[in-house]
Every structure is written in structure tokens, then in C-alpha cells.
Length: 269
View 1: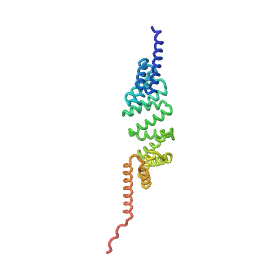
View 2 (view 1 turned 45 degrees about the horizontal axis):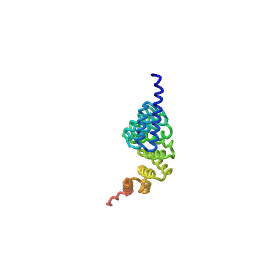
View 3 (view 1 turned 180 degrees about the horizontal axis):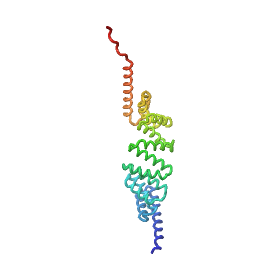
């Protein structure tokens, strides 16, 4: 009896692998229901195998991409990680799990998963995406200085790539949020020199104008705000900032006039 176990186990894994590949073919042809059925069948045939891990991973992808069920996708990714040995797929499953946790508002759990993923020295693409997601979660949690450190790291690693450009913008924005206004103005100016076009440029200009006004450069701020009008996503916010800068300039002018006006001479006796 004992001699029959290894051949039967090997047979189950082979059958499971065949069914898994049938599921992959169905998935490639967008026969989603068939693919899901095949992956579940592959799991039933060999529930503790690497093929089961791959099948759970594919089920998670289906829940994410086609059914918008991040809660169920997350459960599938957890089961996948219990059985997966493939390093690349494990990294993707961990990242997708963290992303689904974020979408559910479970930010602490997401940071825990991302921390373990980053400690494992993932491949470059996952490293950049996991760093960006970690920074975004920290920003949402209002841990601005920790988020700022990660965005700086991401910009250093990704440079001119889209994820690096976005990180550079975030550096300038968060420096402003944390009160580092000279650094914020410097980095937003540099961002605009490197990337002068597109919606991100308008966001950088608006925030640069706000930082310059806070630093006392109101005329520069007003010129920037006038330039960004019509390109910034929220024109009401631009108008409000223009009004605030003009009010500040008017009050400053009034104070200068009061200081410059000599007091009236006393009446002659």
C-alpha cells in the first residue's frame, strides 16, 4: 500500500498541472468562468502543491481584474503564498495582496506586508512599486517625513521614469507640507525645469506659488498663479489663492504707507 502513494501523488500533480494549463488557455481567451473553474479543479486535485499556489494566484488575479473583489482576491493571494515556491510570483502575490489591503482601508496590514516584501530584496519593478505604495500609505496616515524619505529614495532609483517623476513631485509637495519651504520651492522649481508640461506641471506650479508666497515672494507667486489658471484641476482653488496673495500684498502695502507717513506736526502756539 505504501509503495503506491508516491506514484499516486505524482499522478495528481501531473493532472493538476494539465488542468492549470487549460485554465491559463481559457484565461488568455477571456473565458473567465472556465478559467476559474479549471483553477479550482487544479487546487482540488493537488491542494498542497505548487500548482495549487499558482492556481490561487490566478484566482486572485481574476477577482482583482474582472470582478473587483479585492477582499476575495486578498484571501486567494494569502493561500497562494502558503504554497508558492516561484520567487517572482511570490513577490507579485505579496504586492497585489498589499494593494488589495490598501483598497479595503487596512493600511497597517498593508504596510506590514510591504515591509516584509521590501526586506526580501525583490526584483526592481516590484521594488519600485512596493516603495511607491508604502510611501503613499504613509502619506495617507500623515506620516509625512517617513513618506518623504521613501519618495526621495524612489526618485533616486527611478529618475526619469514615470514612477520617479511622480516621486520627485511628491518630494516637493511633502517638503511644503512639513514646513521645509525653501527646499520645497527649490525642488518644485527643479521639477518644472525637468518636466515643464502636463497636469503634474500645473500641480507643481500651484504649490510652488503657495510656497513662494509663504516665503514672502508674493509677486512671483501671483505671476505663477496667473500662468497656471486654466490648467490646474481646480480653478476655484487657484482663484482663492490669487485672492489671498492679493489681500496679503494689499495689507503689506498699507503697513508700509502707515510707517512712511510722518505724524502730523503739532499746532503752533
